[in-house]
Image (tube, rainbow, N blue to C red):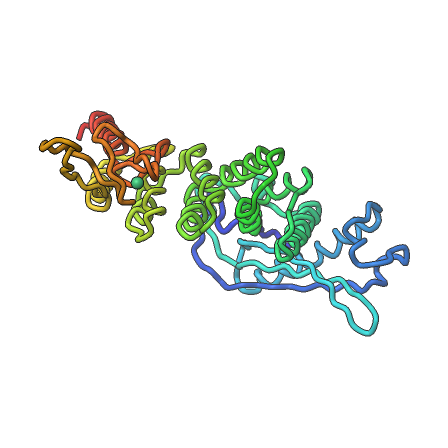
Length: 362
Ligand SMILES: [Zn+2]
């Protein structure tokens, strides 16, 4: 056994990576003859409950992992990060074979003075045979749903699969989650998928979650998806001022509006530098959202007097007392009722600045 730390994440907790030594890969191919004749087809391998099969798979996984550690060690590494495991079916000559591929990045890392890390007490960082089998299960579930997605069909995960997806933070599930909301979800399923969505992104590092959520909300054309992302950012307090800025600067009015809605949500924690960022956003909002309505003088019927009305972007003239256009339901800023409009957000941000300034003694 090589005493190397192996982890699926891209960093090592409590370790300082001093050198990246490149990607290492190992393959282990098992012929079908390794498994007993009881197996009719390849797909049965994973579905099989037989103890001996599971043991054999675990042993193949272990072989691949040991090989990988050997390669990393030869490169001068003492750890492997970003471990990936894949399984493939190779067929030829009427025979199917099963191949495990493991790859990762070999690194040289320093153990900190306090001695934490090497024999990672954090045992979910160490990969053992059981976890290798679990990773295969995750990979299989995601692959299956990717096929469903390609066929335009609905997707689902069993509870046991979903638990493992969360456990291993399987990022490949993200496009599937987005896809699920790109489609119309039956009402009785909506709560469940909403929970899954929140659960998954709530478990990721804030930065990583934000990267995916904001990129998607910027580019998606689906209203349903925009709404669930908005919901997630609100629920998880994932407001990211820099990323909101990109939305507000977008040419598409709909995306600009989303930026405004996001500013009603919160951040998990604030720093003194946020005061400047908020100030900058307020200036930007002022610049980007001018009133779309024009005030016009309209002559009264049977009278020489005129009265003021506001003309909506859609061309309809509304009484000054009317907040939302009688025709299209938008207000002077082009916002619908129920949406936060720039004026509301402005005063909300103003309050935030005041609180933060007091707190940071600025
Ligand atoms: Zn209108």
